[in-house]
Image (cartoon, rainbow, N blue to C red; front, side, top):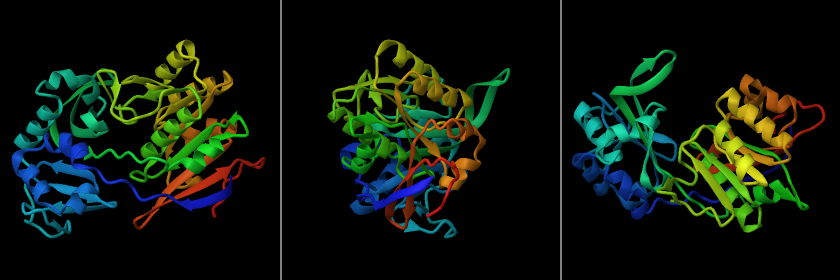
Length: 330
């Protein structure tokens, strides 16, 4: 891969009070009050809220995890007895509120490790996995929770959109980054910009993070030419979209399984462009991860967009495939 460009992305948008209201309403009153006591600047830049049984509640801001005290102040993780201790009742309360009081109604996603929240946020769960043969049927005895705060930022992917749709042609593009570097936000905006250019896009939103459908209505604006299948395995959703919606682009978040890789190869061979995201710290790690090798060896993606963080800045690097197919570092 050859580095073509490297730019600094616009600063991440803040989460307004309206955007975070659904998250605060899920929390026990004591924890909700602590967040409301926090300064607006801190609260508006929340990335994660974590509850672990027997440990103090923590929040992640600008990639750093801190203890949140009852008065809304932040303390280092090694500064003990400053925060709110999480009990099993607190976790159960949060999960019940997240599922509108009917935990059984969220079992389909709980067995996958999360509960989607209104506003596009996601509540991840850990606990005792109940198996049915080799498969997880549900999770019980919850031990920890991670609430990831969704962001929406317009025009963050303008340069990437121009690279995906260049000279009237669509190019297969892979977006990579480590966790919390903005892959989902970037992909969402790229889909929105493609729609504005008149490109029909089929979105496989398996974990309800990109469109975040609620009763069929997206919580995030994606434009007029986007068709969404949500809550369905990406491989199956991609085939459904190909059969029924005639997309020009198939978009999906976080390639994690061999069947996802197979679906991408099949879509690309059907003449449909593919835009997807994957976890990798950099180009070298992308080549080291075996799951991605079929995509790289078959040259499915002609370019890679690499997102990273340097302090509070988010960096976007664009790489193009070369005949040697050998990763390089800038």
